[in-house]
Image (cartoon, rainbow, N blue to C red; front, top):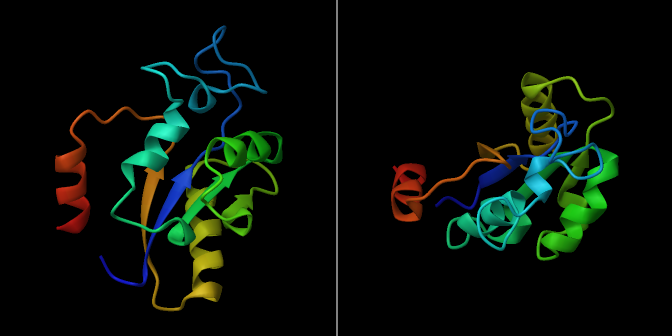
Length: 130
């Protein structure tokens, strides 16, 4: 993978879509719904050997950033981008693109949701490398 390739994890959300299990302070990506790790941890772990932690960005809301950092301390704190106001997927992608453009004008990014379950890790890696 290129030295200018970044993973952007979309990890906001209000915790309302999986109610009553998830809540604002514990949205589904911060819950261990499948196995022992949370969906967020699974997403981060799936990126191993593809993106070093310094090239993984997490776009989230302020209320959830601290817990995500606790769950994945290898990702540098400065790579947690706080949404000024939740406005949906397009604004998350735009915010990440603007941040990366300033950090690395040659950057390309893979946009990944923090709450998906992907069973076939090898196929996932293959497709991102294609």
